[in-house]
Image 1: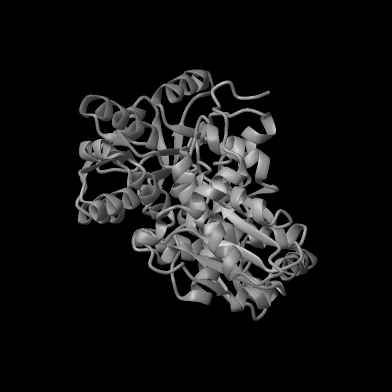
Image 2: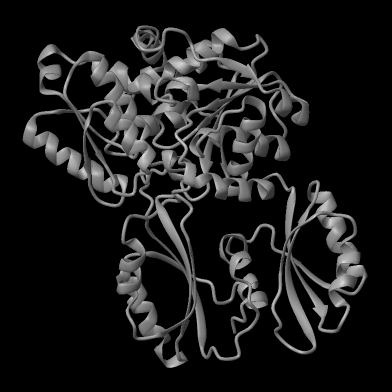
Length: 516
């Protein structure tokens, strides 16, 4: 079924013409580099190239589309100034273009925007409004201000001139890549970059495969294409904030379903591992959305193999919050399957620890958590360095052969995000305990606001919160709630307005936190 709101989308020939005439060279004196990723090429046994959009003046491809759109404005429109809603990269592109052209610029950003991005936009001379907790809030306010002031809105992706500007990335790849170019991996948020690249490349070399890559929990384009119409997601994962879009554009939707060959979804751990891959090959640190295409390329290689010919991954941005680096490094080892997270039951007798360490062998232990839980057995949380899935499987089988009960939690998000930091054994004092995980917008006072919203009717028996430098905070909370109050609890949680999940029956929670 066609989307009734979708306008007639431009043909590939039209977008190619527009991309060829885009004024991107005004702000990019030279094409961004297409570097061979030596380490990745060796590991994947395939010719891998990285299109270095992280090397633009604003460390993102967004400058291309923003500048091309603004230079298409009339003199009268330029005199009114421009306004844009953005959580970061598009804002920097618009602000840079506006300063270059000497026009007024106003940017509306969510209050959750990392300070590094706010500071970068402010340095470029734009006026900034911090409004709401999400891009949607900022976009609504931006439209209101535009209507009141006459400022021209610069869309982040659903605009033909923006798409054509991003399409210049595809033109450069075709000029720079080996003649046997077989595939291009492109991150997908609202669809501006992949629409431009796909339309241009397919017009000139239709055999080249265009593979889109989503972050898990933000698959708006994939789900829309599968449904045959644009869908609006109720919520999106915000780890890769540059692609955290609830609804794709009407134009980009039509272009993607006509020109994109395949869409892959990758996890947070895979993204973190891809950031590490890019660093090891380039010594640059990509933001999560910037490394998305590398993660997708690796996933495709591991599942179906890569199409014949050189493979290009677009490194789309490097506006990384420094506070996020610790979390990325922690999760990258799991994304590379270099660290396993295990829960092993050992006897509660003298010498049991020593015997267990002997069973692990000469592998490096990255983490060991334990607390006395009973007088007969103990569950220990252990991190172990491994060299991939085969060694992990061999380790688990070896421990079981020695009589240990062993559970692999390497892919359990609750275990990796919360439990590994709060292992403390079962609590005999906790009664009628339930466990819930929450996400709430991360801003000054957010944790206090969350606790105040939760109220004091039920006793908190467990609480873990870590600020990862992301736009959203994540909490694991235990509450003592009698069975007769469970329905009332769920009604209360529904009214809070925060995303939440019941984790009471999670294997990690039952094994290590005493959830019953």
